[in-house]
Image 1 (cartoon, rainbow, N blue to C red):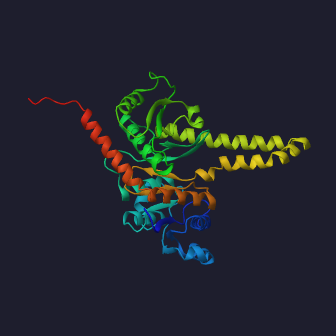
Image 2 (tube, one colour):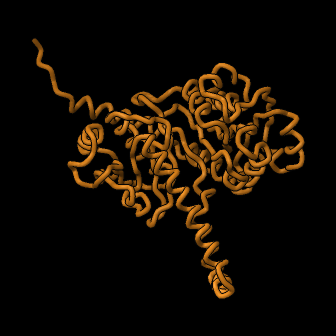
Image 3 (cartoon, rainbow, N blue to C red):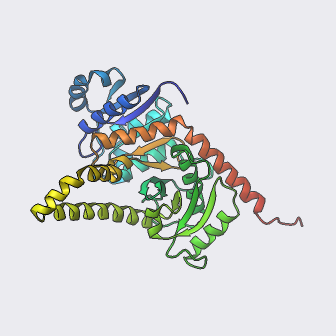
Length: 350
């Protein structure tokens, strides 16, 4: 896709809305001047800020939204009462082809429920999955599911592998990504029945790239595979553990360098290297989780994200739209269905 690209923004979602959303859109626009925005939110909160951003104002159409979906609202309640909310209107803009993607920092459960209801799932997808990036020793990898589906069967895991594979090709630019199933061991006999069944199916499906087999928790950071596939319970635990570990080591470094005058002097010498390290592991660089499996692009920004993090989420949404991600995923899922039909046991006519 070339030319101008319109992104729908939920201006009221997140801890720092609407300021972080608008400033993030301004940063994204500087990076990609071909972007336009549909901005949904309460006029009294959004319009005074938007008026101060002359460049963004020239590329943004503001639409008043009466309601806001709070972080504490249950998805079922949000579906019933949030029809005029900024979140719902942003998603409806994608459904109506007014925008190519929607981005929100709001309530994850509500966003998923609304997106699934409005956009529907693609043919061949039983459940949407949440996917995002991880920094690794080799660069970046994709991991899914990160919390949408606590329990999964083998077919769900196979569908996640297909969607994650398409995601890696569209966004990371990998023509032949490697992919693996997260397990308690790399040996073929390890894991429960769903993992064993999913592995057997993936060995018989001709996806682009290579099926690595099983990977373990430490393989995530190593970058052993480009796409890590797991259920939402395990994926969310792994994600939060990784985030907590980064914060822990950051605090350890601060404490160490403050320990003595000599340590402080050592920090001054190491400051350029520390700056590079902070940039490498900055969570804002990896902000933006995608709801894969929907017939439209919906990106969830972290609720506590600042403007720079939200700009990265917008950039991710733009990349997905420009690279035709939905069409790629639709084609791969159709190929999966064909492959399963071809390998299904034939029943003799009576």
